[in-house]
Image 1 (cartoon, one colour):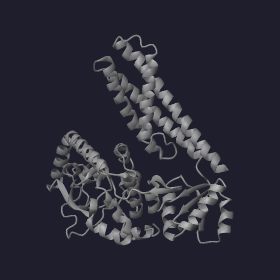
Image 2 (spheres, rainbow, N blue to C red; image 1 turned 90 degrees about the vertical axis):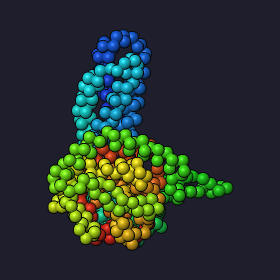
Image 3 (cartoon, rainbow, N blue to C red; image 1 turned 180 degrees about the vertical axis):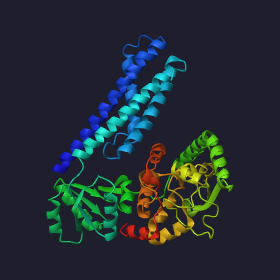
Image 4 (spheres, rainbow, N blue to C red; image 1 turned 60 degrees about the vertical axis):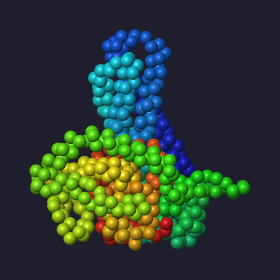
Length: 458
């Protein structure tokens, strides 16, 4: 019952915390508008219209915050929530600038909205920190039983647990023990984490937890992700799930391609000064070529050449043998270290997108030798090839550079099976957040880690 109580508290915190922040921001907007735009533009009487104006601001702000995960206090790291709120504030006030300019039939002054944004940035910092502290102080599960099936699952979860505070695992238990004993142990804990357990045993545990109101967390298998995105239907009086097994529909492919062309062209124009500066710096450092080409694998196993700004010394892989970069790799140049940290080295892939070999959002295209290695260890790796490779993607936003191959597959499948135009927009916005996350650019894992983290129970 304690877990149900915690779930209610989480809902209350999320609701009231979000409501308080939204109301404060809207009140600030009202006073900025009232003390500046009415006086400046001689628009003295809106009567009830002012409530509509503030209400519209509330709706836009709420939508941008929800869209960018800016209201997930405690569920995400404090920095992730704050950066999401920062992006939301910028987007909301830009939309508001356009709205006021249309309303007054002239380009309004940006100064009041810049002032408003500055105050909101500071308050967002306060709210994000305060609500995150409240969440972690009172609502983080403090007594979780982890039931696991393999040693690989055990090692991986402990590695993850040391870096975060979401899960406080107090006891471990193998899934092959006596079911009665497992159930008796479950009753002694707040919640249960099920990690890589055989399907039949896992189903029994979930049903038991459901019956006794005990919180349960499940590390999904690949088949779970495929089923979760299924359409609901029925045959006579039997409910059925029909998974999406053919990738994107023709309409979705057309929309995605048009979106890619528009966004990549705009980005290329906007980033052209940056291209000139970075190209000059790379040439100045060692006189080598500006761009680096590498063969990658995309949709349906097709091979193409990906473009990147060169961030390593010339001939970093002389023999053509893949040598993954490490955090302090001496092959990385000075300008290369900077452009890798800021993800600027990836920008030339806009040419790949315009040419049609890549998409803006999709599974990250891997090197040929990596694909061959992964397929031997994890046959399901081929599932990623149902969609064109992307400049950014679900795994890049929610994972890390050294996330295990098996978990990358899960994340990529979540994207493929749940693709929508809005999801692409969301991932593009959230990509900005990853620039501020150091762990998202950590060095690549080695092949022994791939084997350790491989989960055969798909």
